[in-house]
Amino acid sequence: MKKIYLIFLGILILACGPQENVIKIGLVAPLTGDVKTFGESTKNGFLLAIEEANARGGINGKQIKTFIQDDKNDPTEATNAGSKLINQDGVKLIIGSVSSKCSIPLSQVCQDASAVMISPTSTNPKVTIRDDGSRKDFIFRACFIDPFQGMVAAKFALENLKAKTTAILYDVGNDYVKGLAEFYRDNFMKGGGQVLVYESYQKDDTDFSALLTKVKQANPDILYIPDYYNKVGLIAKQARQVGIKSILMGGDGWDSPEMLKIAGDAIVGGYFTNHYSPDDPRPEVQEWVKKYLAKYGSMPDALATLAYDATCLLLEAIKIANSDNPVKVKEALQGIKDFKSVSGNISLDEFGNPIKSAVILKYTKTGQEYVATVTP
Image: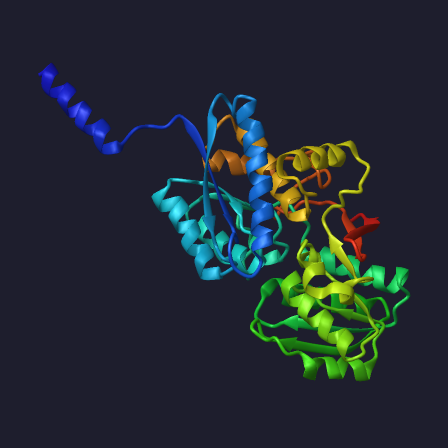
């Protein structure tokens, strides 16, 4: 009887496979596609946080094993990546994605599977809440949200740049771009400014001459383009070519070393809202810049920084919960207050969004220049 029991136990172990004494954490990011520099930076920040944690002995005595998926900045790819991590790899703790158009569908996959997800950089409110306003309680983020970002941009344009008029161009099919355009527009008008042009384009458009003709005729103080660097670079060049003199402004999607390569002098003098500046003198920032430079040989952008912060936030929740069970981890996350991170101390509100500051940066001929910090 004992021999039969042992044989049965052996078969059961083989069927179930080896039990790994590790914590599984996944990453979903655009490692290829139109915004691949976002994904590269995100991956760097994510891996550096994991490497540091494993070097310290792991979390709660367990080493961390990573699983990385490329969403190509495509919503369908993002949902497929999330499904693979959860259903094939057994991952229930996920960092990602980068863009809101990918993180919104990915968040539903994670929510339905009771898997914890922290987006480092997706700023659209729909990432953590449903259309009816209810909370997706397994979903969090490490960045501020677009209502705040739009308000900061409008306030800076009105008060610091003394703008009275603006034009806005946006991608109608991108939730991040469309939402940020609306929040900026509403706050600019609320502050007494006039919106002279409010026009949309499609994702694959490359010729913006018709829209820019309208902008030139209106002659606004500000041309606000809340898109990603690859599209903004094209629009900026074409805007200057047709003689538009307006100050260019945008959001955190502008943050890429590729921006100056694409736009050249057309983007110089343009302002954008962002999550952090490497010029911030806080010790946390300067230590981060030092170790990132040592590891990767380049200055960490906001994408790398927020991926590092999001991963550290997740690791802290696992430590607090003393478990990698997603239910316990999400409960620990929801209770986190004043967590010290590179991009600023994080206290998560009832919707899983951090209450934190924003910075205004300006493009120069050689890169980015810190201008101001705006607190909530």
